[in-house]
Image (cartoon, rainbow over all chains, first blue to last red; front, top):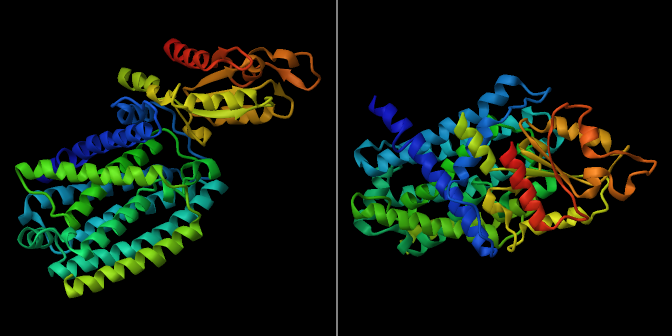
Length: 306
Length: 143
């Protein structure tokens, strides 16, 4: 019963989707202000989801019916589970278990795999180009991010949220060290790619592929995808805060966590608004070259404790 | 389901389709995205795929070559959807009315596949941005 409450209401589905849709609004509003526009009203994210639920769902003739409908829901469910584990074990440290940081990271990977499945089942040629790019992007950003997670876990000697948070409460946040700064910057780029936002939105590429991998999505299927994207927009910066920036503590700590979250959001929005889209070979070179090199450098610095 | 219908009116995604237009209207559409007329404050944005669209923005008199494409795209848009006849050519074929290759204004063509489409007419060559915003908002209110 308690677990169901955690999963469905707080900090699971309802809470995470409300915060996520509000962050989608912040994203669009700040982007509009950067371009000297006025921007959408605050309920825009909710209106988009409601509208998509109101519309007809079209399933392509070549698509497998159940797979096309179920895979986005599967992605949504796993993202919700990831956010629930993060939320519960960062507030109540004794609920944390060994390896939960890895579990959460791979629960956040499942939406991309569900998206690849749905895109490839839709039978659209432009979608299949998007699918191949999404898989390549997934392979490229996972490498530096996993190196960083292993680096933090080796430093704090434990693969759980509890050990990471307790290490940072005793020794100060990891971001105050040089290896933490490098890791934080690299992880910002990685979550930008994981969210499929502008410098790395190759799979969607609205002007080039006409929405690419999302091309055949309509109605409720698209709503499930948009909702899981919104929850990821809440979950991934929160994951970075736990990993590098001291996590969340009760009382006044909640306010600090909100400020940290807003700062990471602003970094993501600025990155989105100041960069053009990369080609897929540039993106892979970027992640496997600079980003992986930086992550290994951060690991070496962490070994010497700089 | 009242709230879902209300949210439909607050979030219209537009797919822009050019059917033998002279390009004047296509260029004028971009004015809606500029800081002065910013149409995102009504929740309206341009999308790349007809499957995501709630409104089909059709520019240009329709000729025999573009008619099957228009009907195909109209069938691909999930219903309910709004169709915007944008500019004098789409409303009434404009100065191309008697031309040999023109098969007719938008409403006549659409009635072949759907007897009762929701069409908004925005005349003008090209329409002013204020007229475009007013037309789309009035069309949403009538829906």
